[in-house]
Length: 321
Image 1 (tube, rainbow, N blue to C red):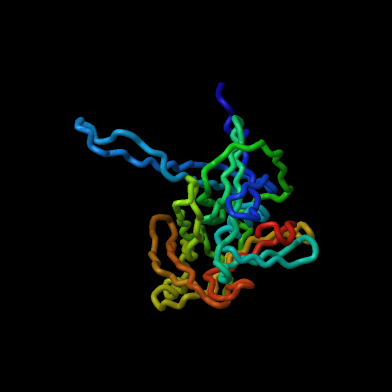
Image 2 (cartoon, rainbow, N blue to C red):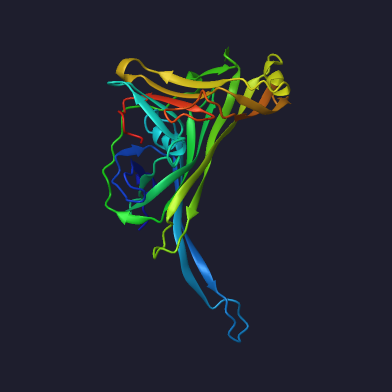
C-alpha cells in the first residue's frame, strides 16, 4: 500500500555530544526533504583467471547527506543558520529574544551538530551528527522569503516517531524586507539571494566503526546575487570602483513579544560582476557579490566574519547552540 507524502515532517534538536542522537525539540515546516545514505562499496578486483573485473563488493564507510528547503520562519530558520555559522549570542529576558549569529572563531571553530528526525509514514529515521554545509536565502518583491539547506550527517537509524508541534509564527512576505546598500535605503531590489557555505569533511579512521570519526566543518564563505531596477549608475560604479559597500537585507514585522526579524548584515560586499540587462521592458542591473571577512560582523568569539545574521523571535537562550 502506498504511503502519503504529505504526512512527512522534519524534527530537529541540537546535540550535547556529536553523533549521539536526541529526540526532536523543534519542527521545521519544509517543502521538500531529500535524505541520502551514502554507503561506500570497496571492489574486490583480484584476478582469478576469469573474464570478469569484479568478484565482490565489500561494505566501506557509511555517512549521509540531507537537503531540505521551504519558506523562512523567523524561529526555526535559526537552526540551519546557527549550524553553518556557529557563534550565537542571545540577549533579552523575555520574548522577543535577539540572536546574533556570526562565524565561530574560538576553540576548534566547530559549529553545533544536530539530530534530524525524518518521519515518512513508514517509520522515522534519525540523522545524527548533522553538520550544516550550506544555507541559501532567496528574496523577491512578489514571493515569500525562502531558504534551502544542506547537511552532512552520520548514517541513518530508525527511531520512535516524535509528535510534531509548531509555533504560530508565519512565513515572511518578500515585500516586507528593507534593503540598504552603502548606508542608503534602496527601493529598487527586484530579487536576490544570499548563500552561506562551508565544507564538511568526513574523517574516516581505523577505529572499528563504519561511521566517520568526525565530520569536520571548514571555513565560511558568503556570496549572492541581486537584481535591481537600474535608475542610475550607483551600483555599477560600486562594481567598477571596487567600493565594497555594506549590504543589509532586513525582514522585520510584528510588535512586542510577537516581534520577529531576519536580518542579513554584510559590512563589506565586493561586487564581482554587474551586467546591464535589457530582457524586460525596463533596464535592470544584475549584480554578483561576495561578502568580505571583517572585524565588524563578528560575534562573541571575535576574529573575522563576512556576515552577521540577527534573528528576533520567542525562542530563549540555548535553543540553537
